[in-house]
Length: 212
Image (cartoon, rainbow, N blue to C red):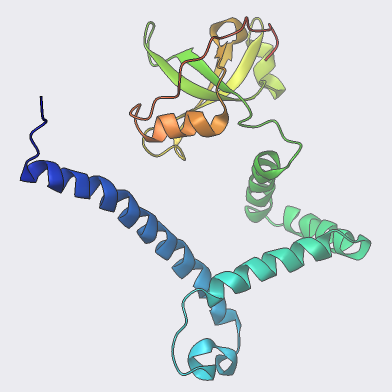
């Protein structure tokens, strides 16, 4: 039986092609536009609109990447490391700014470090009620005075919201209530962002080791 193709079908097909493309172009434009703001650091005579006679989008993005690379290269040598340590020590003694900078640095070091363990494992937990499940990411184990008030073996997880995974909830759960998934973090994020539409292929899950 031949499937009947209608104008509505053509329209929906066009949307399926153009909407992801349009959103991608919009996001890239927003990112590049934001990075182009670094051009304000240059003297007015050195900016593209003065040298070329017109604005050239993307030059600021290249400048931003170059600055990040140079700072990283400088911070790797002995003198650079000393200056970074001196700068961090100076900020640490400034009220309000010090604690804020230290907290942000600890989070960024954990997330961006190649040796960090944050968001390395996708897990399944019961949330927000029993028999209702969601995907979360293992972030570590509780620490500090919190451990004095928890009875048993607990782990820390981050529960992202959908479709924006940058916001979410931090929970501490018994290790026994956390199910490790045979799923990469990238696949789990895609599953969350798509609100369950882009489901990962089913795999046979091997028995989970007690430690996560």
